[in-house]
Amino acid sequence: MGDWTTTRVEDRLESAADVFRTLPGVMPQGFFNAWPEYFHSFADKVGQEPQMRRTRPGPRQITEAEEALLWLRWLERDDARIVWLRAERTPWKPICWQMGISRATANRRWQYGIAIMVWKLNGKRVPKKRSMEFVTLGARR
Image 1 (cartoon, rainbow, N blue to C red):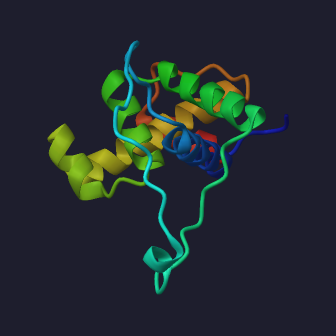
Image 2 (image 1 turned 180 degrees about the horizontal axis):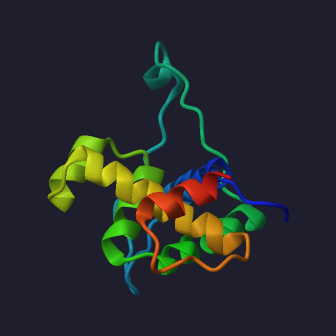
């Protein structure tokens, strides 16, 4: 598959978030909708902007998204949450509020989480006794 880079990991996570966003929601067993489907007449549609439908993700995209989701298991719970929120393109301010940390700390933990994924995907062992900065810089090389 080649060497993994931080950019490639970030892109794959964002792609996974997009795939999961387009999938239909899970409904409980026995759920049904009793409302009749409403068909719009031509007169209803005059003057409206056309709505573009998103294409459904294919089996390969879903498999890649599930694989990327499994990468989060390598991280601490809070770091995984930060990485996933960023993959969903959540702005930093809500992330900082949810996690109760500063912007600099959130960014540092996000970079560290991505770096751990890069190390593991490249088949390297993440050094436990080294600093977050060492691990982050090692992933960029």
